[in-house]
Length: 55
Image (cartoon, rainbow, N blue to C red; front, top):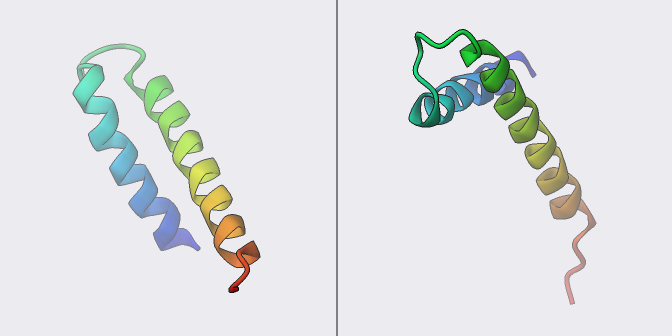
């Protein structure tokens, strides 16, 4: 579980750096919001994957 969160955090840092300078005071706040968004998206994708039905 920890390595998944670490990978998502690294991805969030890369995504955030596209929109906010690393020197900005709010970089960590935006990175946290992007990380939460990625975690929620990952959870929704996992639930959707497990609930799909093979016809």
